[in-house]
Image (cartoon, rainbow over all chains, first blue to last red; front, side):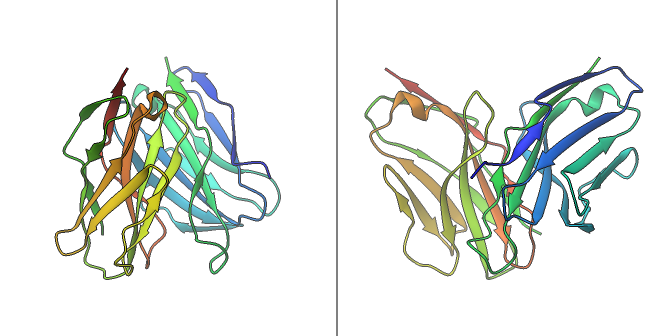
Length: 116
Length: 114
């Protein structure tokens, strides 16, 4: 059973460009979470999605950031017009539907975004 | 909302010795989960141990155990017989049962000296 997959592992963007980060949850998992880790800090929650629904986006910056988890395909975190402050590691985690398993979140390896 | 605090930015231990990492938290809810995650240089987040708040018994996973003091809102991680591979950043995290998000502490960088 493959773990949570994220790609790319490393992404370099110039200021003003768009960044698209992808996350494929573990098989059987329908819940996806995105976290951001700034240098020398802990992970901060950004958004929680289920298939085709955003459940909690209270951690997302109000502008330039968006996330989706379509019926088919991976979850996408999109950052428009990137700025240097967006440079961070972005982690995706997934968990099974409520009532199945321990509802633990399993993390992917992260995408390191560098904005030059 | 939950807050998690780790007051030790760095800790070190001799190989084969025991080390304890501290964590305190705050929540208004009675039902929640607490976790310790390990982040080695690869940056992969690895779940080390989990504790349900309603369980009085401290969780144990091989060389890793917790000291869960609910009244004091303290959740420390004890690593016994430390190994070089234990060197990593350790994050304490909590999740309230009513919510889904994990709230992380600032992390403790553990060095294991040979």
